[in-house]
Length: 168
Figure 1 (tube, one colour):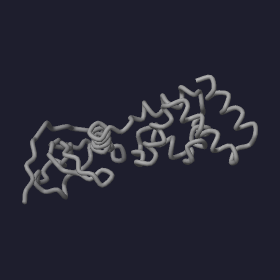
Figure 2 (cartoon, one colour; figure 1 turned 90 degrees about the vertical axis):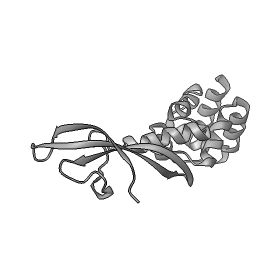
Figure 3 (cartoon, rainbow, N blue to C red; figure 1 turned 30 degrees about the horizontal axis):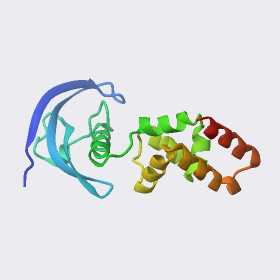
Figure 4 (tube, rainbow, N blue to C red; figure 1 turned 135 degrees about the vertical axis):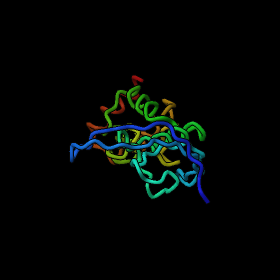
C-alpha cells in the first residue's frame, strides 16, 4: 500500500562533508506512530534526494537541517494528548525548590543523567516518573518524599535539601 505524501518544497543545501550542493524534495506524510506503546497520529516531514522516487519510503530521510524534528513533534503531541508534563514544567518544579539537577534526581530516585535528558526534552518520562513529578508539585508530598530519602543521603545533603524545600 502506497502512503499519500504531499510535496512541500524543494531545498538546496551544501553537504557538510563534501561541500557539494545537494537538492531535496521536502514532503509531508500522515503516519501513525507508537510513543510509549500508545498510538499517535502525526504529520511527519521527510527529505527525499533529488531524482529519487517520492513514493518509496527507502528514500525518506529525516530533515537534514533538524534530524530530531519528527521525534520532537511526536513527543509534543504525546505530552498534549496524554497530559504529560513538558520539560519546562519539570524544570520549573525543580527550580521552585531551588534544587540542583543532582539534588532533585536523588530525591526522586532517578539518575542525574535521566533527569537532565527529561528536562532537555531528549526523552519522555515514564509513567512512574511522571507520577513523581506530579507528586513533587505538592510541597507537603515532596517534603515527605525528601524525608523518606534521608537514609540514603549524607547529613549535609539532607539538611541542604530539607532547608530548600521548607522555604518553597
